[in-house]
Image 1 (cartoon, one colour):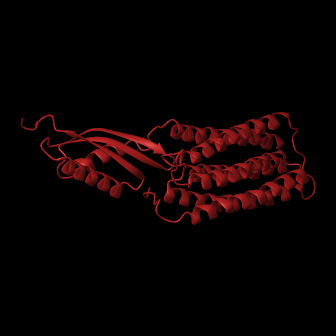
Image 2 (spheres, helix red, strand yellow):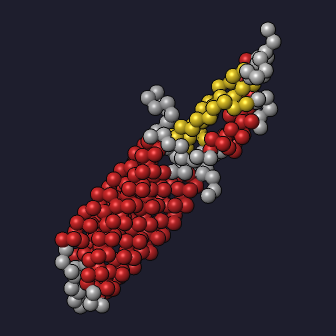
Image 3 (cartoon, one colour):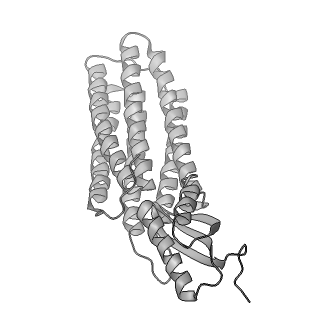
Length: 299
């Protein structure tokens, strides 16, 4: 996966979020209308999913804009974790939507298509597959470019919407061929799948909010980078603190005990610069300098 590039403008990310809101508005209306006209329970379930997507995309857009605000007097590390809160909300809404869809599948009657009803449901499902696959690809590409957890959650949500439309297509086909139980069963599968995607998204956001390190290898890479800086005799500690799509690194390094404060500061600054140059996800580095205990300064 290419390294995120937080320095590039955020206009592209906002365009992706706005496009998601627009497309999900259109798809939700189309699926719900198509489900009612065709009598397809699976298409109606997919419509509920798109309706949930509309709400989560709107929420993601608002919170993403909030997360771009710089640090202030009340938020010394910026507002990056607002993105994780939005991703958590996306996950919770998807879990709730999945449970509702499963409940509707259990209670609904087997569909009985007449005339062009099956063709209507198939046409809407095909359109949804194409639109959501397009939205998935551009959202995931932007998520990888920026490292945004909100965009990553929405990309997963768009992919789940595309896959549920595939199940709708299979279910309607089964009903049209005289096996309506297939669509009823697949409607329940859609609900389970949506709920599972929501649970996975919520877990990722929860990890950020509870300060779980997003990259378990980052500490080792930072330690190795610091040890390459001239004057660093050892690295005693490295801690990674998530800040939404980026992280802060706190570390302790040891230098020769006889160095002046100015010399020690210069080494610490060199460590900070090296880490930030080689790890684009690192927003800030705090370096505490210790005297090398293995070689104490002369009395």
